[in-house]
Image 1 (tube, rainbow, N blue to C red):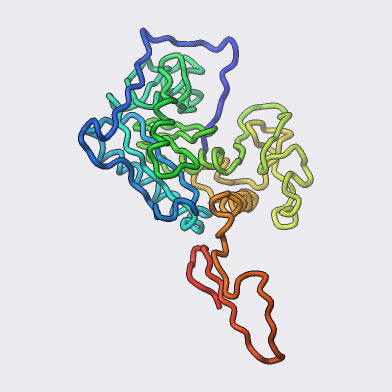
Image 2: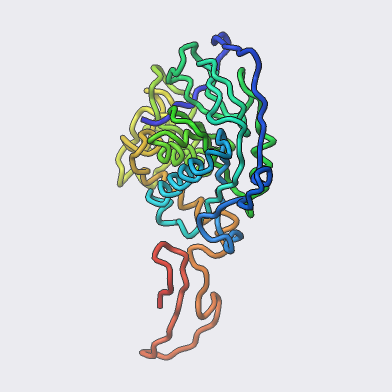
Length: 329
């Protein structure tokens, strides 16, 4: 089951610690370490790839190896998941080295406050420590943390290129959230899938398909959720998928999704065709990739007049940026 993204409502109990911990950031140069960032991909192609910056939080310098192991795991998860696997040549993942004064993250519902660089925290929507409603791990200011947004931006600027951000949090507690940036529990056993789901929000523009609230939903704002029970927001897929399935965008009734199961509903599931189509538009429509993907070059070039005679072959060569790579003649 995936993550709930829950908004706090007036009247919810609020726990207040003695004092928030400052968001203290330490950079590699503070330790005379020359490693500023690590690129998974091809840095020379940064101008032609979508650059996803991995910003770490809650890792001390002594935990550098743990940070790198978590980054390796998340990149491997993306590279083994359709459709990011098939479009890996269009993406760079860039780990920016940034260190915290303490390991971990704030847990506002448990009274745990630590000094981490990016100021991430588990919120407190219910007073129970570790409650599932408190799992929207995020970086905004909260009742027990100091905002680390300036440090996040500073980390992003240290990357050779930046288009999207995933914040890796050094915690084994299950959690994550999407938004302007994706955030996830990098130490959890399902961390890779959590990150994939949250990037589905932040980069893919996809909605949650959970349906845990009773009653009738009244809004559905993304390509994979709809109030239309006949065609959804994906009429071109109805013949293949059948009628939309009721239950999405947190409500059991009146909001519909394309299929029974999808990554945006169940962690570890495949993306449905509607979501894959949306991802294709992201990969090929992004301003960095659009000029060269999926066709990087052709011989002869486009719009070149060709004069030939019947039964006289003419050679055409196309250089692609697809998963198979190479040229097609």
